[in-house]
Image (cartoon, rainbow, N blue to C red):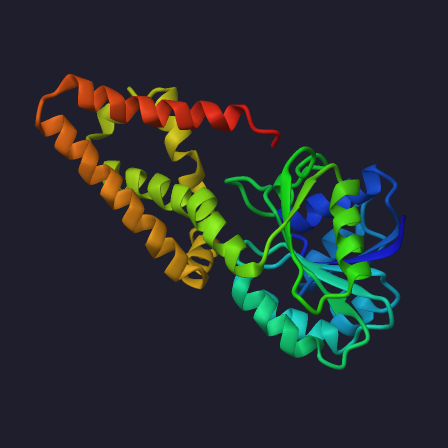
Length: 286
């Protein structure tokens, strides 16, 4: 389906993407780009890697699709460099979880380029990071948001949509600003809440930790994610995350008021609202 695909950055998402492409026979050749010579050697020993390069221009040459799978802070500069090496018909996309700054930078770097850029955000991942935790079914059944701009060629948008759908993802299209507002509420705020809870409980007596049940483990699981990567994500989506954090603060204030006033019906109504929302997530098609 895609004669040659280049994956820039063989971390959790990049390596999982390569595994999925190979498992589904979706690409004849999979090329990996990495900065570290040791990582390049490691990739060359994998069944899902046909070639690995340290030179970015060599890595993208001959590919119909290039996917940038590095940390969000490094994506704009890498996309800019890749666009200068694109050939006619080449499609460049990424997996960044913040789209506004990435897409704005890509618009500038795509001027005069032979290829086209379409932003992507596969909503798949893990609290674990790195190639060692990659798996071929990471994307299957998950949502992917693509963020084409007004001047994005239709064929490029359709190619990127087909790419993620071929991996078993459910693809949705949004503008970069709408994407960043939505993930601030649905992804970035939950991570900050999980980390805040873990931060709050960090000072509890060690003996208490032995009593932790599934509820605490579930609500703090994502706090285990790479702090360096999440610092980049939160800083890049700062304004939208602050807006969602204000909404959470209002909700916490309301919860405190209802607990303090001792009226069971008001507190129960608050808890029921949360319960209904959680159940509504189970009924979505995601």
